[in-house]
Amino acid sequence: MEQKYLTPDQVCSLIPGMTKSNLAQLRFTGKGPKFLKPTPRTVVYRESDCIEWLEASERTITDRASA
Image (tube, rainbow, N blue to C red):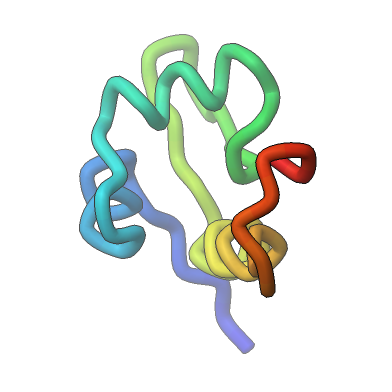
């Protein structure tokens, strides 16, 4: 299967409620989806990594301790 690479704007379109500034903060803290930096000013994401990260956040209860 061929990899699809997404820009931060495309990731924001893929994940409801995500903003570019929130995505940048997640990169900074290491809590977001894996990303690649082919150049110092370019960030791209694999679509599969974004979906995997999103699905890993699945919950069955709104418990504050798990946040």
